[in-house]
Length: 183
Image 1: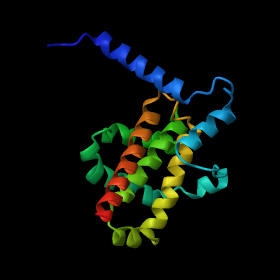
Image 2: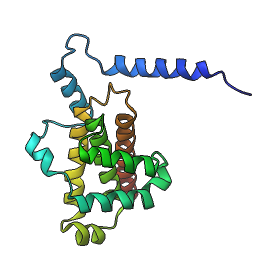
Image 3: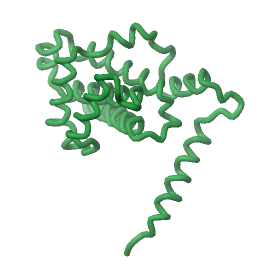
């Protein structure tokens, strides 16, 4: 049995519109209220300043290592990204020529966070000279900030949705670990 392609388009439109109605505030449609909505959905009380956010980026070497680990250990389970396309887009992002830099940055931070979350604590400590908890906390906050900046609850851009998908996987994994430790 095959389904007509228009069914998927209609379903997507209905689901996206339902989400918009859930999160949109018709009274205040300015950028500040949209950012507040994004922050409150993610459980953030206040945004990072631009300088704090800039400090959260790993070094180029650390970034390359995290991306490598991601495609070796994490992506085989999520299968959400194509490695050669990602590598090409990462190069454009780093040169400042990527057409959606904020969306790609959100995706990048969600990848960093998901990857660090999957590494053993001693590997993180040896590689990044900081504790896994401290690095995860910083990267998770940066991911939240990056998602807020792209108004993830309104985006239809693939990289923004990919960043949100990876962020949700991080949270589901964290909840799973907490439940497993509780038992």
